[in-house]
Length: 238
Image (cartoon, rainbow, N blue to C red; front, side):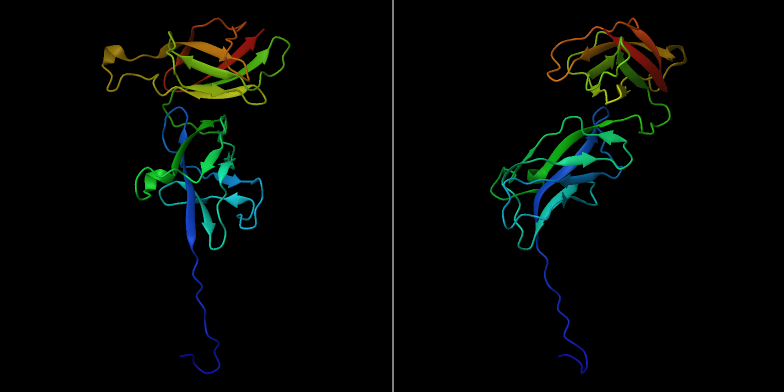
């Protein structure tokens, strides 16, 4: 019953249908990224009447995932969808963007949470503030003529570098940041076993296929890096 002089209040229902949930992790440590991210779909092709309004922006949930919903009369697209990911402060970059296919496959008779989660790696940039005590290498790759070597894949590690070792990429200016979580002092370290430095080797692979190894003209590897803090490395390629 409505009181005299007051219009009835309507509470419309809002129905959300989950299309996909993204979990983003650091490419080197595997730890979830807690910095805020901008996750969106900017284009959907071919267009259709019930498509979400573009940009279709993901919402960050309490569990740290970023979720794309279709609400009320909107319907999620079917097929491959390109998802754009960026960090407002530039701390992470999506070096290996990949389309996600919708709808997500359901493993069992009824959908469960894990059916919708897609884990993607992001690569830290030089803008990321590293925690105290972490071993890392901040570097730059340039040609002998001084031009930045953009898009190269860089792998650093204690020789011999194992297959499948974590790698990074150079940006448009030839810069890269590689975190070396496995290069550390022993914990807990005996007094006689504390290391101040480690020797690292390098593998450089040229874009776009990253099949051919590029031998650096300088410096000569392996090189020492200081354990427990960032080191600076300038690499010249032919």
